[in-house]
Length: 106
Image 1 (cartoon, rainbow, N blue to C red):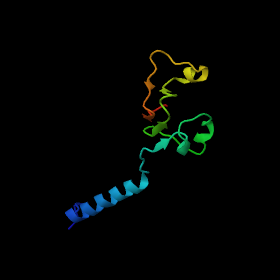
Image 2 (image 1 turned 180 degrees about the vertical axis):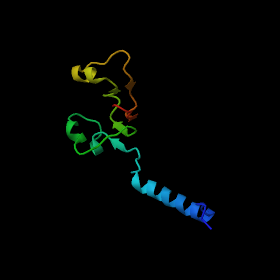
Image 3 (image 1 turned 45 degrees about the horizontal axis):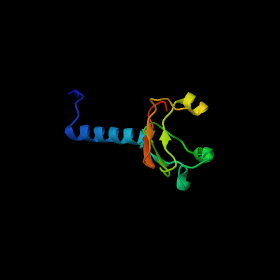
Image 4 (image 1 turned 90 degrees about the vertical axis):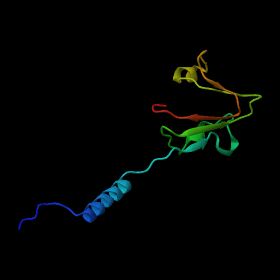
């Protein structure tokens, strides 16, 4: 008698589990990372080299620690950054411990 090509419930579970394990091993699990800008020195002057060796992705969080009596944090676009100018619509943070989540394309 010819076999009709049906699997038993046990075979289906084994096949499904194997497929799930394969998918989990195949795709790298990504988790958001949290970076303290300036590392242990915090957000100070001359932190340009701080980014060396770091890879940032959407969803990562940048933590800015600074003395709020002297500094703040302003979100600007590339033009504002290059010209050291903030528009009236720029978001300003003043807590001294601000966390910014990177969005896609940042």
